[in-house]
Length: 130
Image (cartoon, rainbow, N blue to C red; front, side, top):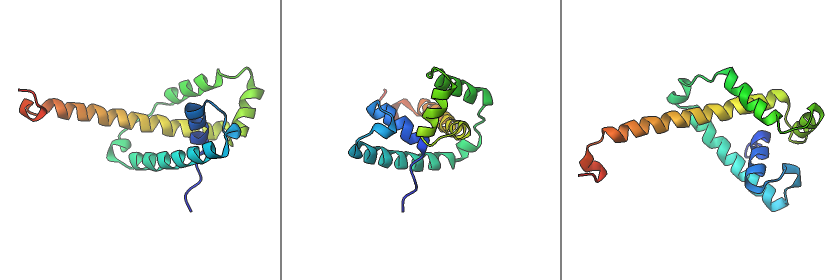
């Protein structure tokens, strides 16, 4: 049986792909979100298992900023906590999910930077540049 889709990814993808809260998705939309979230979780798991991920240091302040950006979307604490509850999240699970999200992003940025350096070092003839 495939793993349960992350509540954070479900929420994030529902808003990104459909501009909706997960509980308002149609059944077909819900199925698509679940499949995409599971696939993304597996990709993230593989990314976080790399040597590059072991060298990434995520500062707590970056997570705090991401949390503050999310929190400012809500009029008050009641609305914020209600939305988290609807998404099966708590403040702690949201923080953990954001840490994971930011770490994956940092690893990918590190890999892209290293790849760019590698490409710059290739002989011009290999790159179609004469």
